[in-house]
Length: 141
Image (cartoon, rainbow, N blue to C red; front, side, top):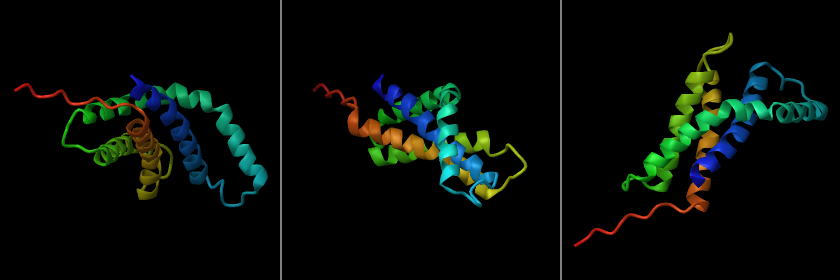
């Protein structure tokens, strides 16, 4: 249960911020930016944080479920599990977001994919580092 809590708290927060960065980059916002504009970016982030959690809650739990499934496969180590969870989140985010808007191409696909990849890997690492993982039951002889 702690695994899902970590994913539900971390993924919408980091993913929402990365999604905001990606959309502002795609719109050309970073061409001529000063410190005041960066302050506006953080103000928008904190004003829209509730929507990041509203729309990112269920995808975060889906990614957490993939992590939960992969932890029960003995041959998959923690690093491979983090990579697989990240790749699943990359595909999920890029297919969800990259087909929107007038721009399309590899840059947009990768940027929106990283919106899912980065928070999923961070969450999977946090779970591996701080949450107790189930131990394999001893084989009766």
